[in-house]
Length: 162
Image 1 (cartoon, rainbow, N blue to C red):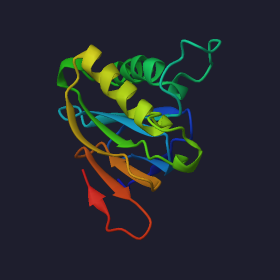
Image 2 (cartoon, rainbow, N blue to C red):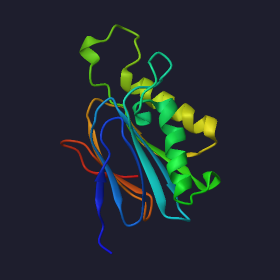
Image 3 (tube, helix red, strand yellow):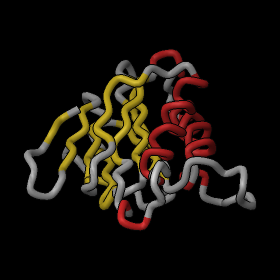
Image 4 (cartoon, rainbow, N blue to C red):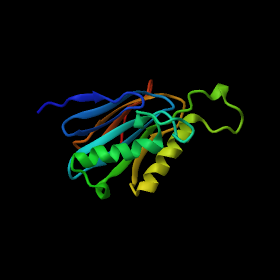
């Protein structure tokens, strides 16, 4: 069966079964939270925009925040037959895209997104297997539930596989 690709847009979430692939284009300060279940060959991706939903009214887009994205991803994966105890996580993104506008000693939005996604994984007991985060360049990714690999692309740099 040929591979098909689904783009997960900002604040979006999507679960998929191999051979489908999931991609996120233009991860700047946003973070891609990726969950993979190797036995079932299923995975899910959230294109997280902000670290916490606590200061905002409820959103119909659970992928917008790190604290609401993970439970939504888990539910979609359970619907595909995944077991939470088999999941591993990966993180990509969280660049500091606005360093010129930041006050000294201020944490960038990208770093806060990364920290919130790591904490969500920790609280859920899902091990963080790999990450490609920080820096000042945006990224585009493609995730393959077939084997759990994530292709990370940054402008003017060599592609990286996680």
